[in-house]
Image 1 (cartoon, one colour):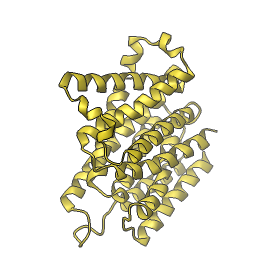
Image 2 (spheres, helix red, strand yellow; image 1 turned 60 degrees about the horizontal axis):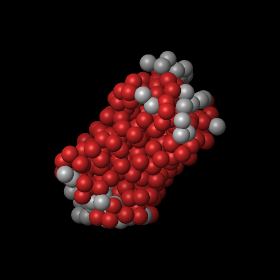
Image 3 (cartoon, one colour; image 1 turned 90 degrees about the vertical axis):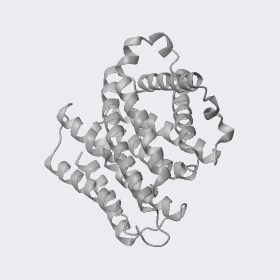
Image 4 (cartoon, helix red, strand yellow; image 1 turned 135 degrees about the vertical axis):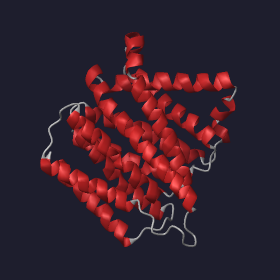
Length: 291
């Protein structure tokens, strides 16, 4: 079942990137705290409703234990918002999908997850295709994205790769340690919601949390909902699946993101990119079969 949960999570994250782009005209000082608040607030409420016993189980030791993952996730989200704002989805998202390299390698090196030579080779091809898809052959041409902004978006995308890849690996450790995928979501939600609200109170920036001041509020709510639901499915998959493989399956969402960026965002995509995306999808299927 973990394979199907991973695919559902990948599909939701694929649509999530397009929804985030639709509301990327919001100020980052408003988008980042609001995004963290909505996403983690939804997870916090859901986890408490399903498992109210988490409130009595809560302890300071657990909060400190998940702190590295929380910092990595929040930093990664901030990088992702910036990358989406400055760059084309068809460019930034393929770069972001290379985050699978980090949990894949850490899962093998640290957790000693089993891996075949074929898996390594197919994973290398998948990463290479992701990098090639990220190349913008339209840069500098009339109507293309500003080159300096696109370069900034690329750097933010790689920042997301580092932070979110590390967070994905730590999620596997947390789920294994607590033996309950929802408990780590509860801890994440509690810490981040408290931190965001506390920061805005101390700095006098509560205005940043006013939902009505956001542009394209429907898309903002949609991307937060997709993000939160995908996290639930992802952690359920991690209960029985290997993080090295689940992280790679998650990259299959690039197919949905690319097609949606063409149809909904009207971004230009060459036939070569379509071919490489199809190749990525085949790599995902091969990894699923040989596992």
